[in-house]
Each structure stands twice: as structure tokens, then as C-alpha cells.
Amino acid sequence: MEDQLRTEQAILKNKVKINWLDLLKVIAVFMVIVAHANDCIILNQDGNFNFEWGTYIGSLYRFSVPLFVLISGVLLLPTKLNTLEFYKKRLWRILPPLLFWGVAYVLFDGLVLNAKSSSKMWFDVLRLPLSFGDASPHLWYLYMLVGLYLIIPILSPWVAKATKRELELVLAIFIFSTFIPYLKFLTGLAFGVCDWNEFHSFYYLSGFIGYLLLGYYLYTYLPGWSTLTKRCLGAVLFLSGYGITYYLTVSVPFSIPNIEMVWYYCSPNVLLEAVGVFLMVEGLTLKPGLFTQLIQAIAKYSFGIFLIHYFFIGVIFRYFAAQFDLHPGLNVMLSSLITLFVAFTTVWLLSRISMMKKLLM
Image (cartoon, rainbow, N blue to C red; front, side):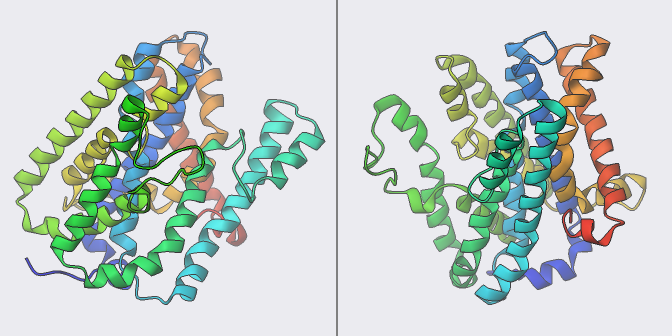
């Protein structure tokens, strides 16, 4: 199959022809909500700590953030905007919401949830340009996204000219790099990493930049595959990734660093999950109807839902869903669905205000 150039302008113009991306966005944002509902089990917020079900669910949703980055690779690579234009367009979309909602979460946490002192809240606000706080841990994604946006104009000229084989070579290096945390865990060694150097040999082709390139690659070359091949392979990859993630989670010595290593977004097992979901959905035609309208509506406001859902998830789980004395898995699902509805409704209402719309979409 001949190389195909996918520009940002062409993608946006023909968005209706790739509405399966909307479905991927909805899956990704819902899994983010499930992740934070599951934290309520792991953190014992319903008074019924259940590590087993926390592990079952926790091994399931890890693909959510990588899926967002795969989608960005489809939509943004290669861009034909020059560097300054791209930065102005993309960074301006991220930085104001990051700071605004970061402050909102600090105030919500300090005034409503935990009654913090004004000096502590001021400190949390002042640190926002450098890092997210305890009140809004999900905002780490925006800091990472800023980094991807900074590199996209630099990558784009190479992506536009790269052959399929060249892309595959770089992606092979990325895939290899996902094994390095396990290598370090087993041997204590990692290609030059030491006390004075955290950058291993494959550092510059590792991390989320790999998912960005992989999204472009899959979108460019998957159309040549049969639907049956994509769906079956996707299911196998996802189930394999989920099984490996669960097995490793219950097998490694229990500690937060070990669990985080297994659940690391750029691990080989989570990579399998993310690619599996992508393959199962890529090219799917959504027939006009109520379901498609619902998917498109949630996808339209998915960024805002991601930004504000953390206001609601803990409160809904602890003071509503957990009161029904349901199975922990059902508590997570119920609180996630309610949070999705509440967050969607809130974003829809706030987006009627022009100033708020810029901070949510």
C-alpha cells in the first residue's frame, strides 16, 4: 500500500468519515472515570477494601491514556502548520484550562473537602505552573500533552517523508523500550541509567511519543487489513494485555512502586491493551441513530468531561453508590456512569457561556 499523507486539516475536514474516533474518545474518557472510581476501592473509601476487585478493574482501564495519545497521532501527525502557528493553536488550548481548573481544584479541595489553610492553598496554587497537586492528580495528563505538542512540529517533517519500513524501525525501538522498567526491576540495570543519569539509551524514542507515532502508523496502514483480521487480532491483543497486567499485578511483591510499574502506561502489557482496543474499533462505521448521536455528543465534550469529572467521582462513589451495599465492581460501574452523566451535563451547561467554553473544549 502506498504511503498516505494525513494532514491535520484533511482529518478535521473529513471527520464525519472517521467517526469511529469519536467512539474511541468516549471509551477513553469513560475508562479514565472508571480508573478514578476504582481508586475509591483501593483507597478504601467505602469502608470495604477489596484489593482483588481493585486489581481486576485496575488491570482493565490502563489503556485509557495511551488511547488518547493514539488518537492524537491520528489527528495531528503530520501537521502542516509551522512551529509557531502550531504552538499558538495547541498550547493555548491546553495552558489556560490547566491553570484555571488547577486553581478550581485547589479551592474545592481546601474549602469544601479538607478545610486547608489559606497558606497551604496559596502554595498549591503557586506550584501549578510546575506540577499538579494532590487535589487534581488527573491533570498530569495535560503537562504530558504540552510536551507532545512541543515535539509534534519537529516530528512532522520526518513523519511526512518516512516510509512504512522507517516508521516500523522507530516503532520497534519504542516497543523494546517498554520492557526497560521490567529489565531494571529484574537486574537493576537499564542501559546506562545510574545515580547521575536517568536517560537510558532508548530514552529519546520511548514514552508517549511512541504512542503518538503508533497512532499515525495504524491509521495510515490499517485500512489495507480486512475487518475480520483487525477485530480478531485486536481482541487477542487486548485480552493478552489484560491477562498479563493482572497476572503481574498479583505476582510482584506488593508495594505502590511495583504496582505502578506493572500499570505503567508505557509498559508492553498496557501497549497490547491500547493497540487491541484501537484495532477493534478502527474503521467501524457508526450508523445514524440515537446511539451515534450520543457518542458524538460525549466525544464533543470529552475534553471538558476529563477536566471536571474529578470534582464528582469521589463524592458520588462515597456518598451515593457505596450506600447501596453493592458488589465493589458494581459500585465502580454505577459511580462511573453517574459521574459521566453529571460531568457531561455540567460541561454542556457551562459551554453555553463563551468564556467557559474556551476552558472546556
